[in-house]
Length: 633
Image (tube, rainbow, N blue to C red):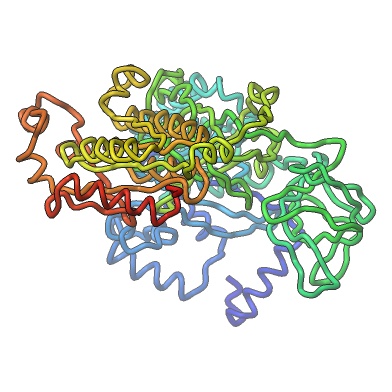
């Protein structure tokens, strides 16, 4: 690259030369060892966008890590992680920038291994075109089909099917045509706007930058020719105005601005805008940037907007055009790509983040998961790593959104594990669920406080958790008996008893356990609203569901009681003979044996049943209720 100049001058010249050119974001994807990294390395090398030190490093590392004999291994240009170089695979998403005389490019090299499908989806989410590589000797594989489906799901409308390693099959035209036809047959349902199939050898450069004399039977464009000329621009400028607020900018008492990136349409001083969540409106006073005020900020512009009136808008809100408002709902239907090694559990509480807004969420229904072989919807109770499904989501509060097909920025989201903060899914909103829009809370004259006051007590849930045989039901029963003698109003929800009625349809899988606790928590919340002291005695093995139950009621209305006994002790007690059956394999999914129990981290009460008897522990709970003001004199 510009060998007559110093590297700083060459880089500056390169940047200046790139200004004003159109930009194409594309990704390479496909199955393992189809040559994705090699193809990008070849593009960088042949476009003369490497510095001399990069070439020297590449030659040295090709000798150490390369898989091409004595030749340069172009894959090493993008396989940046040590693990990638040592294993000869791509793990993370690698982004590279290069330019030609006609266009500048940002390319995402995504991994082909199935366990890294989540990384491939990340790369696809910001791309305009997909280069889907297929090994000519292997043909269409399951991962090829999976990546094609994800590409379509994420709204990419232009695909290049790169039939790579064509040299390994002697540049066989018949084999090339068979692969092209196989792909076209199953991809027809995805309704891509364009599919261009190119025979190539990334290692030797056939049909990458220049036409190959080895494929005289191919009359189409080279890969670079197609990338330079394909039209993929989506007209975000003509779409309704969308401005997700990332930050409320208040450097002083005299300035209040809303900072973010225009996600659709354009904004001008004098435009009327509305906060989608609240419906409050104002006019745009200024469009501010570091370089000065603008007369227009189009889609993609990062700006600060000031308004002519103070309105209730904060981080996570969306400013929109008043005559083209997005949907606002607390229930949505969406396709999700599951990215966690822990399976999806319908009913479990997660966090949903769309733009800069985060709300509580749970999958209220898993409609189906998609069979990657046939692309048909199949019934399922859960999703595993890399599975794709259609779900209904119930949110803790309404959000403003567009359909993903109309606006990717305001129609997409991620799901986050509440305890680890790990991203467990990526989602695309398909439509809002209208079934709850005509249901409203009925105002009642008699409320929880008046009911509790009549009883002379403060309502609370005592949530007893612990292994089977730890003594939960025994202690809960003693506590209720003592409260009853004191004239208190109580009710016990016991795990075994509830499974004879309300939850008789549930088994003991993780999915059923989550639903079991969700129903009990809802019932307990109603009893609290009635002014009662509710004693809930359930194993409730997962912290996430116990936290969900706590969050259903007000602060101070939930006390977690950890009834603690080591596994060896409860196995020795085994009052119902269940541990013996579980050890013999007669009972499946038994907590402590082949299903996990997550101990409370900071319980409100920790009862060690190996150091005190049940009556003494029950007295400790009664005293805690007195000290907490739950029992009026």
